[in-house]
Length: 366
Image (cartoon, rainbow, N blue to C red; front, side, top):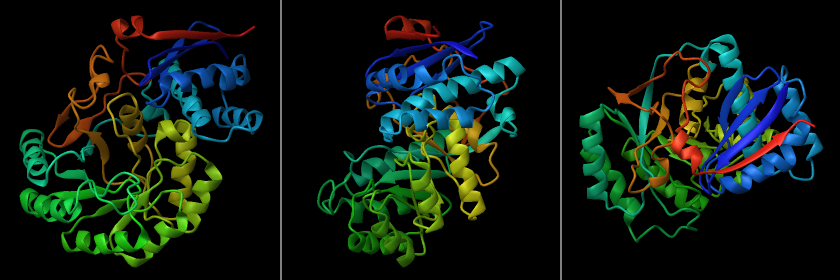
C-alpha cells in the first residue's frame, strides 16, 4: 500500500515519488508540458483513490480512478495517472531487484532507435546536413522529420517546404537509411494522399498523423488509399477509442504515448489490442525526460514491438528544460542503438539539485 505521493515539478516536467507503508520508494513521471497542472490533478483526483489501496492489481486500481473521476475522461487525468503508474513500476522493480523490463517479461539490452527531429524552422538543406552528421557520428540508420504544419489545414510551414524536404532528405541520406515523416495533423485527406504518393515515390516508410488525429474517417481514407504505413495514436488516451481505432484499422501502426495514455498498464492494454489485430506498436516518446526510458523498457517486453524506439535529437538550444534532470543520463546512443541496463526499476536517479528548485507537493494517507 502507498502511504505518500509527492510531486516535484515545474511547468514542463513533473516527477512523482511514491512511498509504501514499509518505506520503500519509487519514482515516476507525469507527462511533460503543463506538468504543474497535471500534478495538481494527481493530488486532487488520483491520490484520494489510490492512497492506502492495494496496488497488486494496478490495472484494476487505475480503472477505479477512471470510474471515480468519470466526469473527467480527458487527457489531464490520464497524464496524472501515468505519474502514479510509472512510480509503482519503479517501486516494484526495487522490491524484486529487477528492471521494469524484466518485470514485464522482457530482456534488457540494445534497442534500435530512430533519430527524431522536432523542427519545422529548418530548411531542407540544413536538415539534411544535420541528420547526415548524426548518421555518421552515432550510427543512426533511421530518421524522422517533419512535414506540413502542425494542425496546419493544408498550409505548409512555408510554401513548398514539404515537397522540397522529402526528396532532398532521401538523396542526402541514401537508400539504406529508413526515413519516416510526421505531419502532426496537418493535412486534409486530399492533400495527405497527394503527399503520400510523393512519400511512396521517395521510399518513405512511415506517414504519421496525416490528418487531424480526432477525425478517424479522414485518417482511414488516407490509410486505405496508400501503400505506405500510416501511423498514429499518440494523443489518444481513452481505451474504448483505442479499441475502435484498432478494430477499424484506422492506422497501420499504433503509437500510444505511455505518459499520455495513463502509464505502463494502460499502454500494455493498447499493445495487446494491437497484437490481437496483428498490428505493430511503436510508441510516441518525443523528448528525453523519463518517457523515452519508459518506452525502451516497454518495447523490449512486448511481442508486437515496432522496428525502433523514437529518440529525440533536439539539444539544449531547442529543449533547455531537458538538461540536468538526472544524476547520470540513461540516454547514450552507439551504432544507432540505445542499450537498456538491468538496474532495478527504471535504473535512474533524479538530480537532487533539480528537485531542490522544483515545486513540491505531498498527499498522505489519513
